Image (cartoon, rainbow, N blue to C red; front, side, top):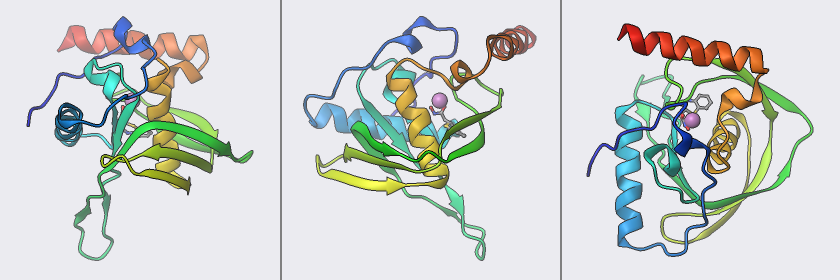
Length: 174
Ligand code: GNR
Ligand code: NI
């Protein structure tokens, strides 16, 4: 397993539109394992393949929520291959989003609160499920990456440029 470097804005590779996965083979399984290791190390709750420079319609999510009673982190690793959104609610949900490709910058983004999605898991099994809450938000954020879209693209140009400027400033200071 290896931790892969994560591309950061304004890297043009983040704007590339990812292509459907054609085969779920050993090489893809290795990429999936490396993506989980990279995501847990970052740490983050989701990662799209394009964020590690691979333009395939593949993403991983683990919300890593805490058990209220034991304080232990509950890991539910989820793999989404060739995901599609079939239905979305009119009701929106706001979440203060962040992105490993736009480090340490956060902004509220409105997205459909509930979605019905279809995808393949790491064994190639098809899932059709209705999702809500943070999982729905995160899947939409990750699926945006597959289209070359970052959460800052949902903001006004003024707000987006401000966050990108803060990012440049932060890098200079580091
Ligand atoms: O770690 C992440 N947190 C997060 C918070 C709110 C909405 C979406 C996310 S995804 C992000 C990791 C990431 O950049 N995935 O592409
Ligand atoms: Ni992201």
